[in-house]
Length: 309
View 1 (tube, rainbow, N blue to C red):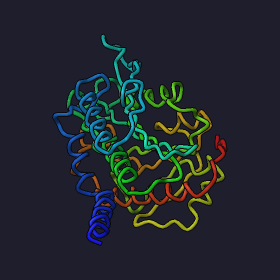
View 2 (cartoon, rainbow, N blue to C red; view 1 turned 180 degrees about the vertical axis):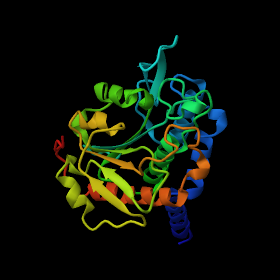
View 3 (tube, one colour; view 1 turned 120 degrees about the horizontal axis):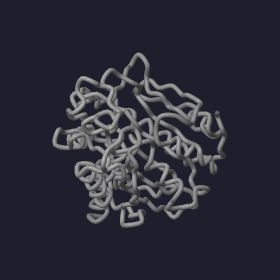
View 4 (tube, one colour; view 1 turned 180 degrees about the horizontal axis):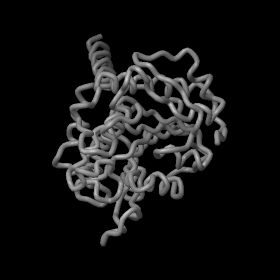
């Protein structure tokens, strides 16, 4: 009997530890978007530090390495907007797999790079080019969400009906280069992917607008999945599957996608995109909504792709 209660206690503690943590979200974003990370520009040592941070957490959660070199899928990224000496830069996708012995897999992704000092032609802050663009919302918020979802599914004590593949993409700000590389060099057949969830800029929730869930029209399965789903935050769906972030690369390969996004704001690609402006309580609610969507998607058959544009 004592062993039974011990096992119950350990199981309860494990499930509690798996829950989405506002404290952990703050920790991840404050680390990734700190001044010492210098904006995580592709090819910088700070982008490498961010990649290592993600890799360390994937290991901690017990995910299986699914890159070509451990968790890493290395690729070369080209700077196109401006002429620089180091126009070819090294980058990597960080890939961890939760194997549930299932035939199909759900991909969860977010990009970890940002624009550094804004000197590669992608700053919206012309008066502050040369100063650090921290990218707390874009996209430390998405990476924090990626890590918390990886923790949740790895530690919740449930063997799910689908596998989950967690990917932190590199070089998104140079033209979705990490996700483009992945779909051209997939670590599993693309036709075994149930659907792909992308998080990019999910930290600046505006209650007047709500959270955009883009890609609702990319499979006839999504209306069934969303039926009756409620959340602690306002959200709305949009049909289109392409545009603006890494889900586009999967959409173009005929994979159903959803892209969670809290919308543009005056600090987009500017020096004011700092951790102090993140709505952590709403971010937690967004991730809890995503868990409901993922869980519901595991109750439907392999989803067929529907083009939207």
